[in-house]
Image 1 (cartoon, rainbow, N blue to C red):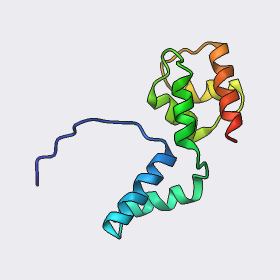
Image 2 (cartoon, rainbow, N blue to C red):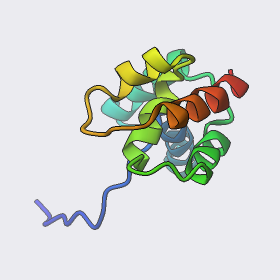
Image 3 (cartoon, rainbow, N blue to C red):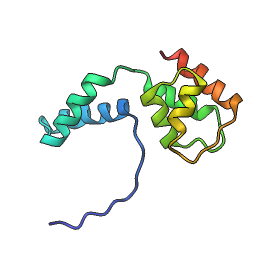
Length: 112
C-alpha cells in the first residue's frame, strides 16, 4: 500500500462537497461506492446554490473566533434565529456575542 501523506485539511460545507464530487465525476466518469453514496445523500439534502457566496460574506463579517469549520456548519444548517445558531455552535468551544449572532442570522435569512 502506498505511503499517503496528508498535506492539509480544509473544512467543506455540504454544497462545496457536492461541487467537488461533480468535478470528480466529470474527471473520472464514475465514482467509487463510498463517493456514490455520499453523492446520493447530497443530491437529496443540498439545495442551496449560493453557499460559496454566503461563506465569503460570513468571512467578511470578521467575527472574532468564528472559524471555517463553524462557517461550514452554519451554511449546512442555515439557522434563522439566534437560539438555532446557539444550538448549532453549542458543540464547539466558541463564544460569539449577541450582536454577532444577529449579524449572522440576518445574513443567513437573506439566503433562505
